[in-house]
Length: 386
Image 1 (cartoon, rainbow, N blue to C red):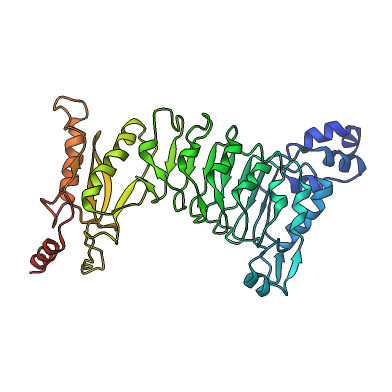
Image 2 (cartoon, rainbow, N blue to C red):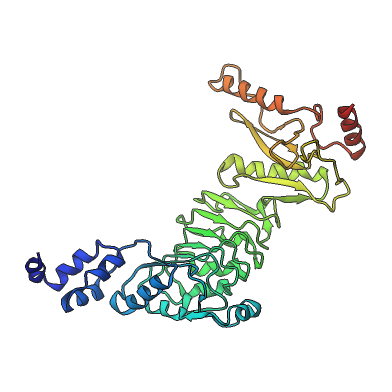
């Protein structure tokens, strides 16, 4: 076996190494020819997550042994008493609380110039790390849950080939989503959900080319109006999740019950054309509304006031109803937006079955197509208790 390997040239070894994960390549570098081949190898896209001191030491060795590493993940170091080095402008309290820990140089990552995928998860880094945005070949960046990683969307200009961006739960992320426009020709997936300091108008992404498929901006400070979505907007987008600050966004808060039909019709018109675009939409009455009131929980602690709006379907027929925010929805009657299907249509039996199921869920608010007034509510539940 050894003699067979000895007969292989460096290029042939490179071809073999390109089928092996990084740890296996490191173990097979038995001589200078193998070490030279490893340095030339574009390591295949396989998971290698640095989550221990042993793996950190392995990564340090790979910076020279496997400089063409294409995928790496950085997570918490499991051993107590160890941490990654802080960046610029770290959160002072966290930095002070971890000042006595053994520090491992985060800057080592900058040696992997050929990275295509970088995952930094579970809050391992504290501060700013400008070098993270100098990987010119990077296709995927995931910083989900890194609430102490301090960066701005403008930094993405340093990642000109980025296709997938996942940074949900980055509480320290700042910037305007129009900064994504520098990646207009590459971005396919964007998840900036639960990033409260990200602002801008969602329509800044409306003219992105066909490869943009999914955008999640929920729980951000992004604004806009879904009525601005035209036929040429988001043409090939498969999923668009918008925050409550957008008119018609998910969780949009109505100032009055009477405002709801106009908002619902705006969402409905988009839903009819592109059913998946505003998936899992709901709206709710604002607590600042003059129509809002506190209700009573039932005997098992379930909220009983129907102040949320959701879409419902029976067959292909779409409507909406008011209900409470829990698994026992205490719904009002359905307000149908589509006409009833023809009795001779192929889906009529399915429609009737699902219609009866929806009607069977209505109990105390039977006859109400919108929330009762506080006086009506009190009277209904008093009668129910009697």
